[in-house]
Length: 216
Image 1 (tube, one colour):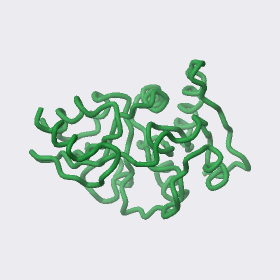
Image 2 (tube, helix red, strand yellow):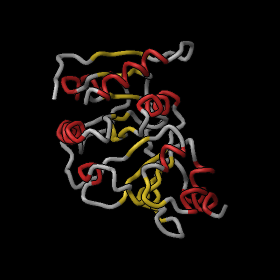
Image 3 (cartoon, one colour):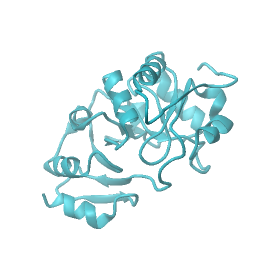
Image 4 (tube, helix red, strand yellow):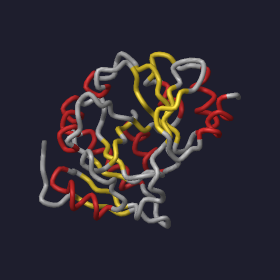
């Protein structure tokens, strides 16, 4: 894994196109590097989940137990669906009504996904965020990207690019500065492998709204 005294840092501006920043992020991901990037909740760490070495590097950088699966971010529902061995009617209803947004769906994982990514499970967690840069990066890569929080496991989540630079700087290939995180609450995680939704983690989307989404 390449380490840097200081990560390359690019800023997003609401008045500028993000094409060049997206292209830079995609290039780092394609080379097996790690990108820290803003989402609609907290900052995330992206690698190409198809790159086994990058996935293992990401576990090491975070100090994350390898039995804990890595969640993913997709460009749109169609890209998310390609991760699933089975896309249930419940998954479809919640995707249609809850995306883009801070709602993560747990689905049966495609057999094409690396086992290291799944932490020994047969499921994968994915969402489509309400954050144009994150979606564009997944679109540019042509595949969903990892979205684990940009911090060392057990430490507070990073809310700013400066937080990430101080704690993870030497391991990050690219740091995308989108300003302070808009919220401190992570996404709501829901298991949609069956006929009814099962709450895995409470978060930004209230459970009552999830239940409303699930009824179609």
